[in-house]
Image 1 (cartoon, rainbow, N blue to C red):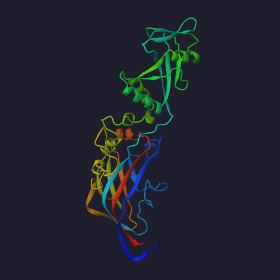
Image 2: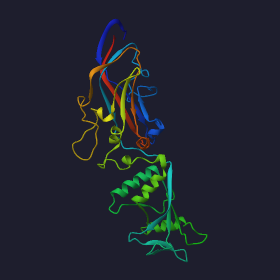
Image 3: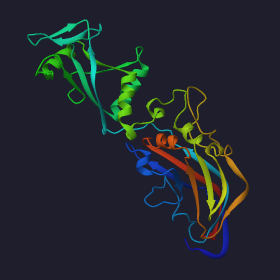
Image 4: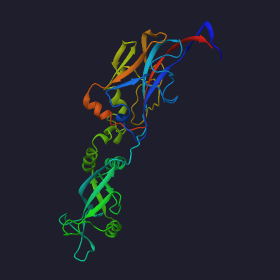
Length: 319
């Protein structure tokens, strides 16, 4: 539609930009610094992520009155990759009665009451598998999770007291599985394997979500500072909890965390509008000041999106 020069119109036009972490990626893969910047890099993003046409600039010669600002954080289940993996040795292999397994002098599988001379397991587990086992152990009555001893991808069995024949053949491992044998991993064992992943280890909030002790949303809003900058002048700078989302799912039952009531009125509004003039640069920055918290937040796995929304009035030539 043609632009009518000299005649302007004003319309409500929320401007938004998002930081997006894809499934099986971590936040540190997308933004390694301690400052998350919005409205700065808008190339290659979908309409779900931004409605900006140019980085840090309004389209054409429009002006904008920012009257409210909100920070919206997605709360989606994480997806973990198959790599990297963590390995550990000397885990117990027991049956339903707590008996251990060994190979006798004939090489047959038999059970023994004590750990001495018993078959042990070496495990190699991916990030996603460790997350599953962590959940299984926290939900179980005895705080343990089980692995199939015949699973070639995850488990290798060893008979340490047999000279030159340490590794248990797979048919024997299958026989142990048929006798209700399993590799027992305690919650402490699983946490130790997760720690071996280093930077690739997921944060505890994603391993055990909705447990009432806080979530990714809480970790972000209480440990970050959000600043709105027009030109090179900081218009406001406050902890992120000052800018409720005013959007998103909400429940009054069960255990949940939400960043504000999902109502457009339940968000921060400027006492006076902040004007963004023609071709004037602007941006929003979310800074993570504490280095230890930064390391934990950068471990965050996707899918994850963090939006900043500037709500207000856009003035433009009539179209």
